[in-house]
Length: 102
Image (tube, rainbow, N blue to C red; front, side, top):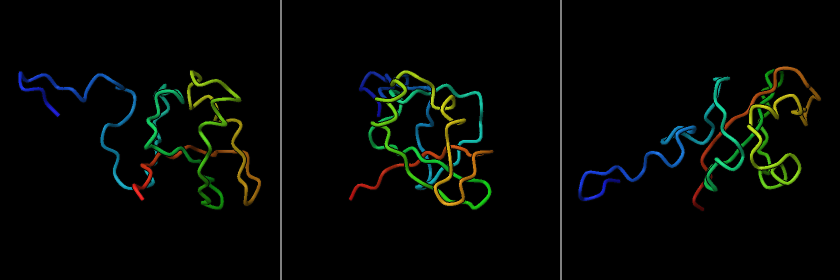
């Protein structure tokens, strides 16, 4: 979205997140991002993926923010991830997706 004087109104609000994620489940493999729970817009969903059984589970961002603080970087929560299906604690990763409009 651009202002009539050529000012880009969509950039600068949150440069940590990809402005146009593709699909529902977008894998975030980079380790240098520092997006916090407060930076994640309401229409994004945060999930966890197990590398062993490929199980993906969506997380409650509000509960995570209450427990660990909304300014804590998302990547720092990775050691706390446990697969609900197989119990794996090693190598679990976050996934980010857009919530459906329905």
